[in-house]
Length: 171
Image (cartoon, rainbow, N blue to C red; front, side, top):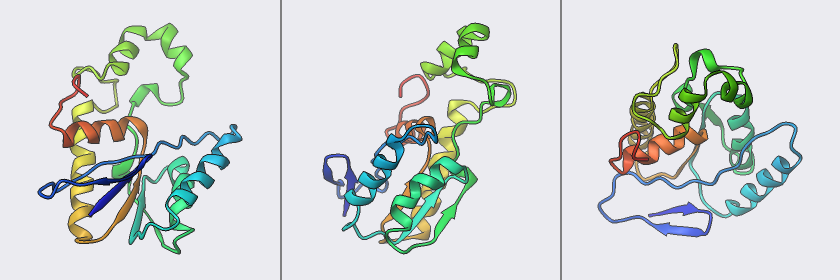
């Protein structure tokens, strides 16, 4: 089997049960470059057979997932388990505001500190478990198939760490 990354197919080790590869296409509704990124993603995967597409249920990932599910004539399945890390009381605050009002925790967040947590939010370890369980469940539901997953930067980094056996602070 093959997994695809930015530079083409990557061979999966024979015994590996889970492989993670990603192409980052950030959604910013105010940035004209996002349409170009979606078009590039659509072109890159035009000839790659895909059996199912899953996305977090948030708008920006569903928009990016359109590059694959629409061009392949597939249904988009959404899962809240693929959401970005929950940041509780930080929701809807800007990075600049957090830099001014909560700089120490922001530094711990940026370094994936194991003890990072915002009231009402998730820890990195919780996101690792959530993402790994979601991917393992989807893999079990689609044996022998190629599925395309769309998630968010920190959630993907947590998943990559979990797959590699790295805990928060090591990823």
